Image (tube, rainbow, N blue to C red; front, side, top):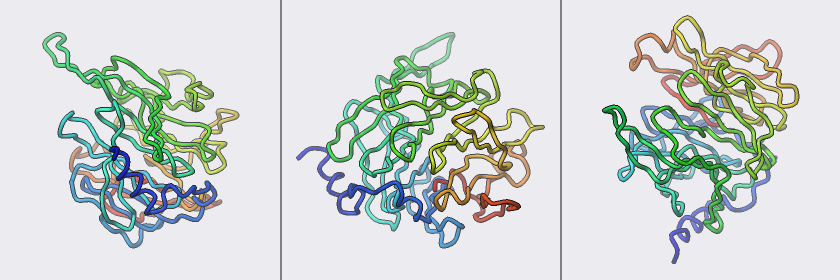
Length: 315
C-alpha cells in the first residue's frame, strides 16, 4: 500500500474526488478562519462557529469548492521547523496529513475547482548558511500541484536557493474558477511585492502592479467570473490603512472596496469577508486582535462585524 492510499480513500469517502463542478461553489455558504492558532468553521455570515482543530499553531485555511473539506497548514513542523499541510472535513472528524514525494515542508494550500488537486507552496533542500555572523535559511521553493487521485506532484514554478528570511517568493496561491490559471503573491519583504497570474505551464499572463517597487498587493483571490482579482494592500506605516481592492485583469484598473485585509469571496461572490483591526494594527502589537467583517457587494452596502477575535478568512 502506497503512502497515498489512505488519504485517497479518505477523500473519496467524503466526496472530495467526486468531480465537484466550479458552479457548485456558488451554493457553498461556509467560512473558515483562524482563532488562537486553531481552525474554525462557520456560516458565511459568522453564525454557528465551531472549532475544528486544537493544536494552537494552525494557519492558512482553504475550503474545498463544495465547502465539505478544509485544508490548512500547521505553522511549525517537528522535523523541518516549517509547515505541513493537513486536511479535515468541515463537519469535523479525522485529520489527515498531506505528504508529497521530495517535499520536506508544504504550506499555503488551495483546493482545485474540481476538488481533485491541491495547489501548495513546497520547500525542499532546506539548509542554513552563516553570513556575517548570522544564520540564514535557504531552500528550493516551488509552487506545486498534487493530484489527489494518483499522488503525482508537478512543480509549476521552482526557485532554487531562495532566502527564506526575507519572505517567500511564492505564497497565498489561488485557483481561477475554471482551473486554467493560478494567482500567487510575490513578496520579498513586508513592504513590497504584488501578485502574479500564470497558466498551468508557469507562463506569466498578468502582474500587478507592474512596478515591483510600488505599494504591495497581497493574497490574491479570483472573482467567481475569473475576470478580476480580490486583494489587499497592507499599510506600510502607522499613518496608513490596510486597503482592499478589486483589480480588473483586462484593464489593470483597481477599485477600492473597503478598509481591511485578507479578503475572501463568500456566497458565490455576492459578498466578501475580511479582517479589520479595532483601532490600528500598529497599536499594541501582539495584543490587538483582528475581527472579521462582511461586506455585501451591492450599492450602498456597508461593512458589518460578524466574528470577533478571528483572522485569515477563507470562503
